[in-house]
Length: 223
Length: 223
Image 1 (tube, one colour):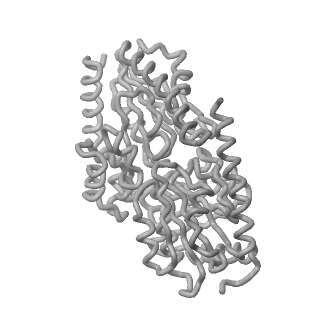
Image 2 (image 1 turned 90 degrees about the vertical axis):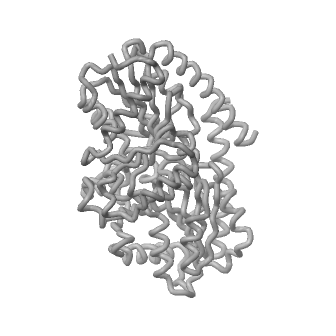
C-alpha cells in the first residue's frame, strides 16, 4: 500500500459526499462558500465584518473550523446569526463528514447562505471539496507576494482571491502589483479584491461579489 | 481500512527513518533544527539573517521545503553556504525520505549545523519527526496571539517559539503578553524569543540560543 493510493481513497470518499452536499445545497437554494487561508490571514475578521453588514433577516449561517478552541465561533456568534464551531482535534482541513455532521440539526431549507471557514492552512484544505459553490482564498499582505507561486493549488482552485490587511501596506515590503501578477500567473482571470477589515476598505466590493455569485448560483435575491 | 490506520502506517515508516537520521546526525556531530510556521511568518528571513551572522567558515547547510518554486533556496544561497530546495510538489510537510534524498550528496562529516525550513504550514509538519535535535516554531505578530491555542501540537513539540515581526507591533492588535501566556499554557517552560528580521532586534539572543543548543547536543564549539 503506498501513500498515493491511500490519499486517493480518502479523497474519493470525500468526493462522493461532496456531490451529495452540492445536490442538497442546490435543492434548498443554499449558496455555500469555503474560505481558505494561512493561520492569521483574517478569515474570521472578514466573516465578522461580513455578518455585520448583512440585514438582520438574512438567512445566513457559519461553520468555522479549527484544530482546537471555540474562539472563532464565540467571536462570530456576536453578530446574532447561527454559528457552529467544527473542532477537528488535529486534522488539518475540513472534510464533508464534518460538514454533514454539523449540518444535521440545521434544516437547509431555512438557509440562503452558508459560509464555511476552513482550518488555517494554505495547503491541505484545497484538496477537499466541501460541495461549495466557490472557494475563496484569503492572503494577507504580511505574508509576502510570492505565496500564490508557492501554494498554487488553492490559488488555482479559488474563484476569488482576497488580499487582506491592506491597511498594513505602508509597514511591510509587499508588492501588491506583483501579488496580483502572481495570482494571475497561477489562475488567469481569477477575481481579486483588496480589503482591510480594520478600515473597511474593499468590503463593499466583497459584499457585492458575494451577492452576485449567490444570485448566479441560486437565481434569487436574499430573502 | 480507515484513515487512522493509514496515518499510523505512514507515520511509523517516517519514525523509523527519523531514528536512522538522528543516529547519523549524532555519529557525525551534526546539530539539526526543524523550523516550522505558517506561510509568511518569516522563516526564510530569519534564516537569511542567521546565515549572515555565521562566520564564513561555519560548516552550516540549509534544506528548505516548499510545495513549489526554488525561491527560498535562491534567497538563502546568497549567504554563500550550501543550500538545497526540497520541492514537495503538493505534499504539505517534509518527511524523512525527502531529507535523506537531499542529503545523499552532502557528506554529513563535513557539516556542523543543518537547518531545515519546513513547508509553510502550522499543522501537518508537527507530526513528522525529521530526526532533528529541536523543532522551532515561528509565529509572527500579524497572525494573532490566539494561535498557540488553536494549533497546540507544534507549540507543544517545539523547544523554542520565535515571535517574529515585532517591528509591526505598533500597527497590529497583537497582545504579546497574552501570546507568551498562551504558549506557556500549551507548553509550560517553552523558551520564547522575540525577533524582528527588519530591525535585527532579538537576533543576538536567537544566535546564542542556537549555539547553546548545539553545544548541548554535540558538545563542541563551532569549528
